[in-house]
Every structure is written in C-alpha cells, then in structure tokens.
Length: 122
Length: 510
Image 1 (tube, helix red, strand yellow):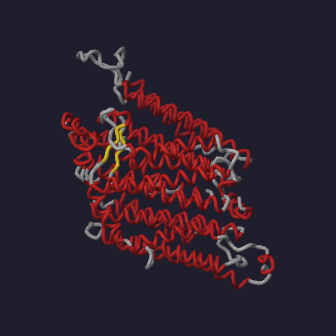
Image 2: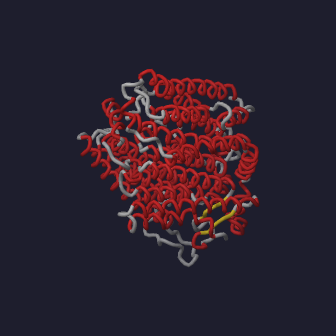
Image 3: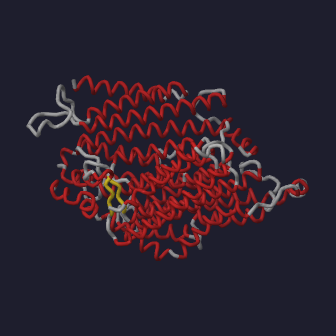
C-alpha cells in the first residue's frame, strides 16, 4: 500500500508541475488542482497508513489507531484549496477576457501597455 | 488568560463581513467603519504593547483547550510590535486610499482591507504552525482581491501571476507542514521546539527537508533570491496604496523566518546545524544585488520602487542570517524602517504618477507643484537609500555593526555598501529625470496646468505621516533599539516560550 500511495503522490506532483510549466491559464489551473490533490494525499499519509483501525484511541487499550489530526488538516486544506481554485479561475477568466490571451507570462508589450495605462489613472 | 490577545484577529474578522454585506452600497459608511476599525486596532495593539512590558510571554488558549492539543495565540514583545506596526501602516494607507478615492475605483476595498489586516495580525500572533498556514491563506486571498482592485488588463495579468505564484507557495507550505508532522507528531510551535531538540540527529532527515521547504515558503513571502521574481511585477502593477500595504506582507515572511528559525529550528538544534544561516546569507547578498541593479535599470517609477523593496529585504535578511540576538534586534529595526520607507515612496509615487499621467522614467513637462513633489521624493529617497539623517542610515549602520563578528562580514559589508551606492545612483537618476529635467520643458503646458487644482492637504497626509515615522524612528532610535534588544533576547529564550505555552503540560511532556 505504501508503494501505491507514494507513487500516486509522485505522479500527481509530476503531472501538476508539468502542467504549471505550460504557462497557459487553463493547464496551470489544472496543474494547481493536481498539486493540491497530491498534497492532500501526502498530508493524509503523514499520520501513518493504517487499515481498519479505529479513528481514535479505543478505551486506552493497547490497539493501533489511525491518527485523526491529519484527517482534520486534510479537510482544512481541501476547503482552502477549493476556495483558492475558485478565485484563481475567476481571476484567470478576468485576465483572459481583458487581455484576449491566456498566457501567464508578461511580455514587453504588456510593460508598454502598463506605461500608457497609468495615464488614465487606472 | 487575557482576551485582548485575540482582539486584533476578531475585530477585523467581524468588521469585514459587516462592511461587505451591510455597507456595500454606501462608500461613506464603509469608510467610517473601516477607519474606526483600524483606529481601534491601533488602540488595541498599543494596549498589547503595555501588556508585554512585563517581559512575560502571554498565551491565549482558543476554546480553553490545553496546549499542544488546541490552537494557541502567543503574545510576546516581537508579536506585539509587529501587530502595532501593522495597525499604524494600515492607518496611513487607509487614509491615503480614502483621500485619493482609490477605494472607490473598484468594489469591496474596505472589506478586503480588513480581511487583510485580520490575516496579517493572525500570522503575527499565532503559536501553531498549521494555524500560521491558515492565516497566510487569509491574508493572501484578501491580497488577491486588493491586488486586482480597480481592474485593467495589465493589472489582472500581473494579479494572475501573483495568485499562481502564491498558490504554488501554499502547496509547498502544506508539504513542509506534512513532513514536519510526520517526523515530530505535533504542529504547536512550543511543542515542536521540544520535539525537534529531542530527535536524534541520524533520524532527522525528514525534519531537515521540512526545515528547508519552510524556508523556501517564507523566502517566497519575503522576496528572497531566487524566489523574489514575483515581487516587482506585483508591486509595480498593484494599486499604489495596496503596494504600500504590501510593504507589511514581505515582513510577514521575514517574521516567520525569524520566529521559526529561532524557536523551532534554532541555532542550538543539532539536526539543522547551521543549515539555515548558510543558505539565507548568500541568498540575501544576491537579493541586495538584484534590488540595487533593478533600481538602476528600471524603466518605470513603480518597478523601481519595487526593486528598492527587494533590496531592503536583502539587507534585513542579511542581519537575520547571523541568528544572534544582537543581529536580529538590528534586523528588526531595519524592518520597522523599511516598512514605512516603502509605504512613503509608493504613496508619493501614486500622487506623482496620477498627475504626470505616466510612470515612465522619461523627461516630461513638469507637473503642477513640481517643487513640492520633488521635495517629498528627495526626503523619501534619503530614507530608502539609507542616507542621514533619517532612520535608513541608522538602520544600515546598525546592520553593518550587527554582522561585524560574522566570518562572512566582508561579503555582507561589501554587498550593503555597494548596494546602497548603486541604489543612491538609481534614485538620483530617477529624481532628476522626473522632477528636474522636466523643468527644461516648460511653458507649452503652463496654461494647461492652470486648470489643475493644487493638491489637497488630505492627499499628502499619508506620505507625510510615513516620512514622519522615519524621522521619529531616527530620533528615538535609542528607546526603540532598547525595546528590540529585549524582544530579541525574549525570542532566543526558547525555554521561556515553551514553559509559557505548555505550562504544566510541558512538565508532563518532558
């Protein structure tokens, strides 16, 4: 099971980084989503992998249990990354509609536009 | 347990939704509420400063859960000072934003502003690593909104870059926290400080990974080379008051570095022995160089100021890299100085760029009241570049003195001194192009400027207040340094912090 989880995290991270390096809005958003899945699985695994174990200590008996804290952390991380992805999509959409291009990189043309745009007090 | 400790987080957190939902159609009401909230925040942080005057570390247990099981907020001299700095900067920026009508160019400025304050104050106060992540996210998501406030093609594009950069940073942060939890089984800073020191060196591989990952995350926030590249584009294209407020955001990164690498991964921890300082030092030297060269090479005024911020972060972290109580104290003094210096120049640049119509560093006909703005720019540039009599000079002198006993003292001195010289040349060039050369191109526009009304006193208050802070920091450098030295000593007193947070539990856990 360790092998499956570890390679899942690795493949998700690699895919996420590859997509982010494409530097176009849509692949970058997908890449960030993949990266956040990878980190969620990683956080989940930090409490050690246990199968069929109770989530909390069972009557202080000497039984193995799965650590509940990483699950709470993952929950928080999921909520935050979900919200962040929504914000990212909205800003990317706004930038795409304004600039008519979904490239993330700023070009020299943008720099020149910035010089002129300041003029209108924008 | 003093409930005022959580007030800097709760007050903006309650105020922001009220502004967003109740006052969204009435900018006047939102302004009153926002100003009242910020003034109250400043009053509270002054109160917190009197609480920490007894030299104790004060702890707030959320929901009264005992540490390390619940979240704690920790108030010591350093965090009280950072909260006060935040609230004072917020007052200056808010006044400027209202006086220049920036807050009315888009929606929800005041709500986002309050959420930003909540995140920053929370990050300074928290005593829990995961909670620090949450407050980072709060301040980031508010900053995304502020960054693209007012809209515009270039600003949205720069905003998108900023968001992507910081989302990647947040993911790294989570990986680092996961690795930290996997090797120690806790995320409470005080408990971490204990566990990290107990861990045998040969088992500390994962711990070292998380220490370096965390350093990368904080370096992104603090704009440390090689992850400083997001800052010039962001600050140059953000609305100017927001760029002035962002002066505190880089300081959040610097604060996190100072807090984590004295308390958790302190110089006495065998597992990460010397690892952090030996990375931060060369990175800060290059950051100083990048900042100075950027100032000299900038084609526009706003990116030039952004590069000046990068350079000042380099100087700050060079002092921090020594990780001695004396050097951290002078680093903190430079931190106070550079926050207000950056804010003063961004606010001034806003006034100049609005009147000039462009922030390109080329000669254009002089603006109305050219002499007034030139005088302000001169004073601000003196502050930023570190010339007497303002606090920049004292700050740099103290930093030079603070790293004097380090083996890498020669490199640090060369970086700071040459960097300052290049920055001075850059600012002199910009000032003469914008304000002086333009006086040679008079008259054609003279009639046009008749229609321009003189600048109101209100619009100048923000700039004047920030510059006054620089003068006060210089005039009262003695008492301020006295406080900072005490704060720094408290910072290095790890067992004092651990005992205060864990209390009786600490004894059991030991």
